[in-house]
Image (cartoon, rainbow, N blue to C red):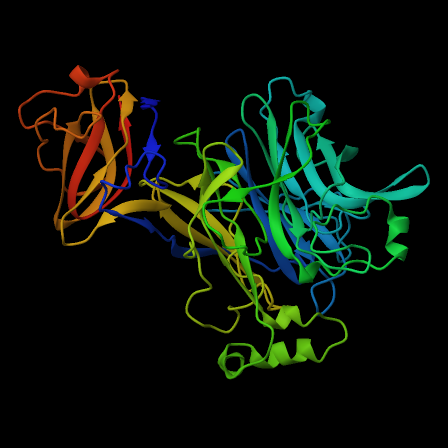
Length: 495
């Protein structure tokens, strides 16, 4: 059955539209490019280290909320939710909110600290038209709240009219661990949230390899906790129409069999193709023993201090992290690339640690056909200012189908489109090319071939050599064939 794509932008990221038997071009993950360091987090309220930068658009201003950890050598202790702001994604300033005292002054950018903030806080500017103004901004955070004389643990919601002054609202769910950035978006009909949990856990309390379903009553902490680090971190999805009543979590499904620990999810709707979700999960890799490679990594002495310290867990010395790219068309099933989207990079003093490659939630369109992604790096370099680094990625350019010097073809499944013009996002060499023609459902040619398409642009219109356009084939099931060499093809759109 033909897939109706209408005139929406389609991305060449997965094989949903690809006839894999007829296609010889190869799917390839792409990588963002580090562009510049924009500022340093070096104020007393920034603590020892920074986690979970979250970008929130408010009118014409971007806010970057972040967790500032610690007042000790191990980056633990006091936790603060802070914010910096920018009009263009390049120049960032700290608002003086005057809400909390830090280092003897109220002149700081602390949004929230205290008993309600324990590990994380995801800030959401709710676009639901039915959302009450006093709840326009929401925080999802894992914490303990006293209910009927007992502290109840779970994922809680805080609300605010302005994104600066929050108050406790209600419990979202207790089914999960939530010890990361738990994200949410509004898809036009319902809220979709992605939360942390663990599976394959073994403990004295449980039989066999099971999931961790949370502990809602803090009195349960008197019994032995399962060692969650012996399980596998995963991502689960929940749904709600009103942000109050939520479904039970389902573990998201991948196109591969790798049971990798997924430390974050960073799932967002992709603005250039809203039917697609994209995610940038940080992948967690804990090695189990010291080897000569650790001796040669930057910060080897610091790792040894961690191992010999009673204050830290050995996994903090043995773990490194990178970042993957994934996409979904239905919220539950995900196409995930096995190769890293972001890596710790060439070895330097403060990288190749547990805390590398935590990209920002959300993207900023900074022009010139690119999006900006942000990281706050040097995560384990306690006592040092933390750099806010800006990376660029081509629009639609998270993955592609590519051909090398030898000519390859990409052939779609039968599609139904609307419009008379076809636009491509692609990059090639001076010798690279794409030719386009149309086939019937059985794979027989039904059009002439296009003029040669070459260059490097996010928007190039395709013209037929005989002067016709695509209108004669609109509304009919057709296959599109791309014959190409030394080129990367990212997306297409009819209009």
